[in-house]
Length: 537
Image (cartoon, rainbow, N blue to C red):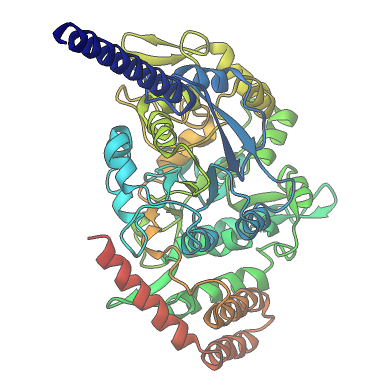
C-alpha cells in the first residue's frame, strides 16, 4: 500500500507539472500577440501601426525621419488627411464613429470641445503621470493652462511656448528710407512716430506721383489678410484682442483709442496715402504691386515673395528690399506696441481617441517625440545623416540648409525634416540651438533686422483664446453677427469719404452692436475669462 501511494503521488506531481508548463506556454503566446511593454531601447517587442489624422499633411510615413521614428519606437504611423475641409472630415469621423487612433485638430476651433463632449478622446493625465516624464519637463505650466473645465488634459499642444519672433509690422523699402535721410533708423531698427510715418508717405507720394506710368502707392496691404490689417494698426496703439478694464472684457471697438485709430486709417485713405484697393488686393495683385517700384510700405506679414522678386530683379544685396519697423501712435512707447500677438498654447491639439487599442504605447511615442531628442529628430532630421553633434552642439549639414533654400516643400517631403510637425516647442534645446532648424537657425537680412526693430512687441494671447460661446448655440449666432458688424464697420470707417460720414458710421456701429446684444456676449466673455483665471491657478 505504501508503495502504491508513493507512485500515486508521483503521478499527481507529474500531471501538475504538465499543467503548469501548459499554462506558462499559453501565457507566453498571449503576450506575443498583445502589445508588449516599452523595451529598453524605447521600442515595443511587436511592431504596432497607429492611424493618425493630421489636418496639416497626408504624406506617406516612409521618409528617413519616419523610418527612424519607427526604428526607435517600433511604431508605424498611417497618416490620414482629407483632400477637402479638415473640420468637415473631423465632424464626419465623429458622427460616423470612424475615429483614427490619434487626431490632430485646430486647438482654437470648437471641434475640440465637440470631441470632448462626445467622449471621443481620452483624458491623458494618468498616462502622462506614468509614461510622460519628457512631456512634463517640456510642457511645464502649458499642461495646467490647457486643462478642460473638468480639470483634465485631453490633448497635447503643438507649437507651444511663447514664440518671440516678430509677426506684424510696417515693412518699408530700405532704399527709399536712405533717400529720405533715415539711414540711421534703418541701421538701428528704430521705430517711427505716427507723424514721421505720415510725413514719409507724403514725401514718397510727392516725389513719385507716378512710377512706370502708374500711380504710386505709399502704403498697401494683402486683402486676404483682413484680420492682419486690423491687428497691424492695433499694434500701433497697443491694443489687444479685447478691451479689458477692471477684469471685464469688451469688444475692441469699445477701447478708448479705437475711434482714434480708425480716424487715422481714414485720414490715410482720404489723403490718398493708403492704396484704395487695399480691401480687394488678392495675392497675385498684391505681389505684383509690392514687387514693383510703385510701393513704399506694405503692412502685415513679412513680404516674403515680394522681397524675393525684388532680389531676383536687382540682386541679392540690393537695398530695394522691405524692412520691418514699428510705427507708434501718439503717447505709445515702442515697448507698449502689440504687433506680435502669439499664443503660448500653440495652434494644434493632438489627442488619443477612444478607438485607440494601445493608449500606453501611444503615450510613450508622444513622450519620445515631445522630448528634446524627439524634437531634433522631427525638426532637424537623423543624426550623422542630416546633422552632427560637434563639441556638444547640434550642427546641420550644409546640404540640408541648401536643400531648404532651393525647394523647401520638396526637400522636406523627401527627407522628412519638418514634415512631421508634432508637439513642437517654440524654444531651443539645452545646447542653445533652436528646435525649428529651418525657420530659426539661419536668419536672413530681413529676419535679423525684424528681430531688432520689433523687439518687445510680442504678447501672449492665450488668456483671450476661445472666450466665446459654444458652437451651434444661440449665443454663437449672436456673436457671429457682432463679428460681422465689427468687420464691416472697420471697412466702412476706413473708406468714409468725409469726417461727417465717419462720425455717423462710428455712431451707427456702436448702436448696431447694442441692438444685437453686445452686452450679453461681453458678459459671457467676462464670465469665461474669470473661470479661466481660476482654472490656471
